[in-house]
Length: 395
Image (cartoon, rainbow, N blue to C red; front, side, top):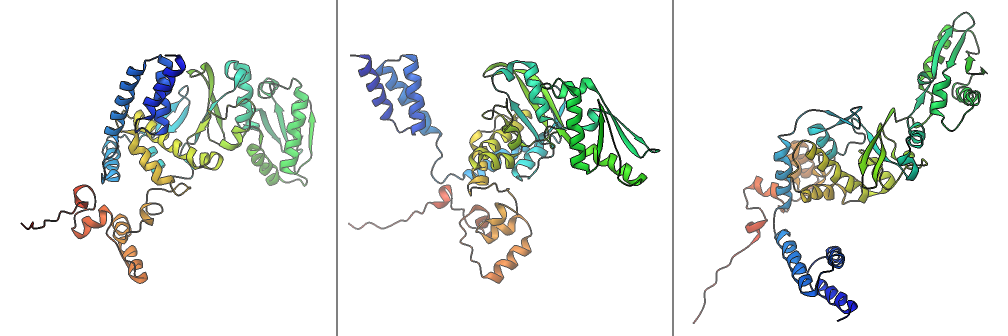
């Protein structure tokens, strides 16, 4: 028998199982890599099929209730410890119960937004090139570039720029005068004043002499971002082991996912952030669903609760994203938009839901768990959805 015939027979064996297409392809490629014979391939395929069929949900199984219990019970063991440090003990990230609540509430902005930025090719292995990306991302404000002083007698704000800092933050430009000129132009365009620049010293003041206007210019000057992304206040660079070997990875305090993906040197395929709404806007609802699953799983694992089956988290993520957008699990999201009046009323603002339902003449079909428990009927799941009839037999 030729190698081609063996391969065809193995493919036929795998195709004969009840596995979904993705698993069939995975089983076939694994068998091919190992050089397994047809008989062994048959046994492997049947073993995988048996395991797959055993792990499927039984008909009428109350998956929602089981998932709620599976996540809720370990959730009572979670700490209220809000922060832990990512990277080199530098960046605060919300963890524990506050982070879990943040995720299921689908908050528009996390308490501690952050990104994990992976780099491309030489940027990932060369520290100097990695730092080029750092300064493109981290917001550079005037306080980081030099000293500010106010000359009340001449009504001037004077900035004495630090040459070493300029060369560090603009690594591809060797001329500090050119950098200072660029900074002066940014000040003029943002503050609407005329700035004089001589070497690394910049001076400007209000058009009309006014102590109040002078102080106002200093305050506005502090907020100008001369380089980088305004939302990202700090970037930590760390060398760590990844699937691509040892490379530099950036951790940011603050996030602007769309802006970062466009920066040269950033590997867009591996970069991620902890704001599911930013992921949704930039990459779509499927990517947001994956992020929701990963973030929830990481939060539980960080608390030592890694025995929660990922399929329960997948169900929660599916429910939150199945409309093509991200909905929270709460009265402003999934719980508040259920078809059942009693299920909505049992969650929050009971009287309002019942009054609205009465005014609009709504009918409750009693299909779910909550509403059947309220009225004292068996729920329509498991054995509660099976009807037995007894008939008499005639001779």
